[in-house]
Image (cartoon, rainbow, N blue to C red; front, side, top):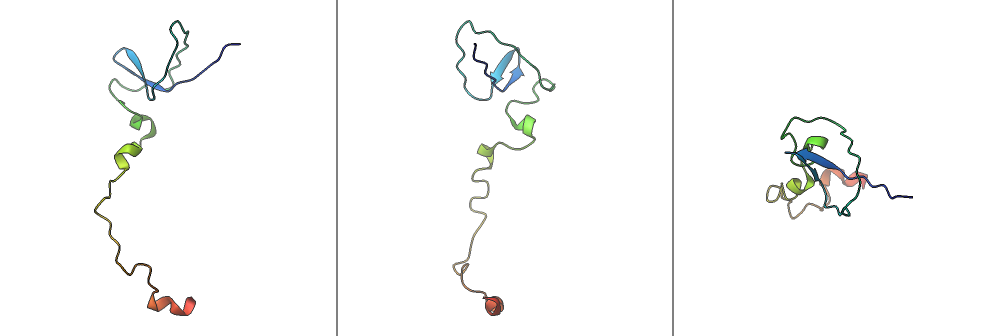
Length: 83
């Protein structure tokens, strides 16, 4: 029995470009199934499929924009009766 593997890729300028590095043995056979059609150049990364920004672009996005006061964990006077 032969092993069957699937890889996600996009088609760009005559080549299929995988989203992750893959090792395919020389002489391997492949069946290519097109899941959706995107206009040429529409997606260079996975962003076009998900409609979201890649996680690598989101890391550190708010660095330096969020701050907490020193008394952040201090009891709130108005809520003392509930504690």
